[in-house]
Image 1 (cartoon, rainbow, N blue to C red):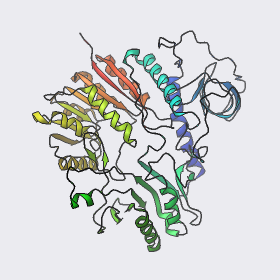
Image 2: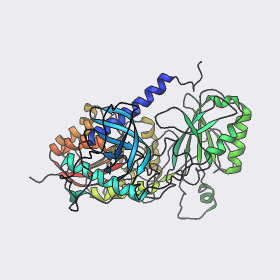
Image 3: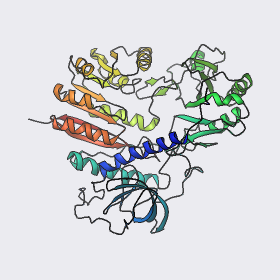
Image 4: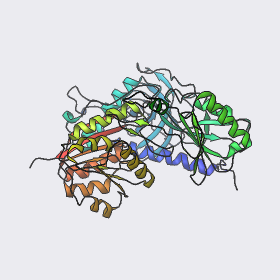
Amino acid sequence: MANLFKQSRKKNASLKKQSEVKRANANAQVAGLRFTKKSAGKPNDNEQPNTSTSYLALDVGSTTTVTIDSLDWMGQGVTRGKTTFFVQGALPGETCDVEVLSLKKNVAQAKALRVITAENEHRTTPFCPVFNECGGCQLQHIEPEAALSLRDSALCDMMMHQLDMPLSAWQAPLSGERPQYRRKARLAIDARNSDNIKLGFRAAGSNKVVNIQQCPILAAPLSALPGLLNKCLSGFESARHIGHISLIAPDPHTYTQETETNRLASKVAPLVTIKHTKSLEPALINAVKKAASEHAFSVVFEDKKGTMRSLFDATRETQSTNVLPEVRVNTIDGFWLTPSANDFVQVNKVVNEKMIRQALHWLNVQSDERVADWFSGLGNFTLPLANAVTKTGAQVQAIEGVAEMVQRAKANALAQGINNVDWLHLDLSDEANVQRSLEGGFHKVLLDPSREGALTVCHALVKAMPKAIVYVSCNPSTFARDAKVLLDGGYAIEKAGAVEMFPFTHHMEMMALFTVKPQ
């Protein structure tokens, strides 16, 4: 069997191309927008395109000089002219030498090679020593508050331009702690050379693994684990059978009564899950177990069939391979989720809590209303929604496309006394499933889809016409597409705003409240 980690040049080139195409598509969507607001908050229609750029012999791989006009919502520098440039690593007002990475019609994706003049006042030194290599972060070169402000403004302009959203609907962005915000991560590994194992994150647009000893954006319990785990695995030939390593940081358990049972149950520890494709040598396993015991983290091994067994549970005094360590991540109002290594969970604890509270506030669910939570995952929004209507016995419908997550969500809800949720495993990209799910009728609906969005669902909702929809999006581009369906179908954007779930990265999330337009 070919080594798991052999990557051909062709595959590397394909991955890089896919990354460039995705970014180019997002850039093409915003290329026609203007990002600088007047004091009144509207796009500056009198802004003149930047004409300082030479466009002669422009091709992929060529270099040119541009002056940056603004920052887009992804944190890229934008310069407008005959060709619109989106420049990684460049900031407004800077004149930069750039290399062209891709071209699509009159839109160029580029990266800054050096700043020639007029360095932006918000430029700062990246705090991570491997920032220029690692693909995990892209925006450590700008002060975080300035980055959020400029990107928030750009995203607002995009929504105003594409959706005719009134400026008054745009709310203050949600943000949280920085830099150590990330409570869940997946580490890549390259163990082809057992004496020089690389464990960390992949380089941008590449399969190359950037080795890290400590990650400054991981939550404190996880930050030093990459280097520690690398040390455990080094020198063992069977480490090449490890596919990846997942990390989850737990939240503390809280109990109303201080008993010995609760004291033991309240112990928490980070969870390390090691995915492997073949058996690992006993000496490697013992090295990992010893480190887990000494540094108080739990370890689970997952084989290629998805079977998990516990190696060490730092939260228990007695060990069993058949009982997996439990990790709790809190939502709000005392509720929690119990994710496994493969489950989706919002990685930013503080921002997630703010996002849930804002969603519930916007929906303003009344005790007698029927509510649906679609793309519900483990119940991040479902549990507090169900709690809001539990006094009248009203049901919340929760639909998720991953069967295992539905099972865990239901069991977890029942363990917390929530029994008024109708948990369903359905594919919401299937029109027939969506139509059947709407047959009972709903007053209000919450959507939290993946990056692909919820186009099929939105087409169905404009026929069912619930009186309010909160749409939580991790992709502003697909959100804008779906929002047009809702707006054309009789809804208006009452509120919308940015959600900074992933500081220092290109990713920006957003959420919006749609209500039925008055007749």
